[in-house]
Image (cartoon, rainbow, N blue to C red):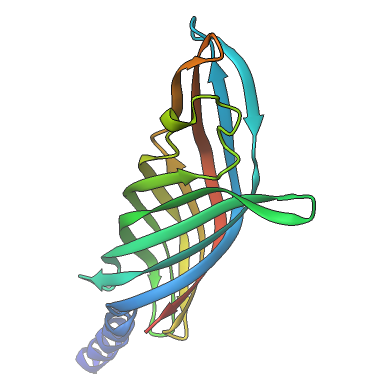
Length: 210
């Protein structure tokens, strides 16, 4: 009798342990995001002192697409491309300030893994390029030496959830490691250096898992 009770208890335990094994699956995914970004432009003089700083904080829109690969019910990786646009309202017209695009790899960990619901976090990195908008550097006389596209790299992290197998929501943040040197030279008799960067990009993502 005791043996039967023991096996019954073990069966219940195994049911709850094994049920996550059909949790989140590997596959293709895509998604959109909206959020907030903090680009800014600095102009330094020959001594390295900041003589001007302008913030272009505004709304971000993003698209991602890629493939996620789970090795256990709780642990996986995903590989994806991203395209982010940061802009602001100028005279009731949305004007793009920065486009950030590249390739990424994130580690995925689900601390709740169930057949129809998963909750966890992600941590990873991405590399690609930044392209700044047409208004950036427009006052530089030596326009041929103004460079608006440069290498970028950043840290990705956030919280993620998957429900009903196909749908997901994420709170996603990106913190860049790099900044763009827009111009470094003589402008109308003054030696200046113009740099462009952003501190972070924070947004809400909707993901569809195919």
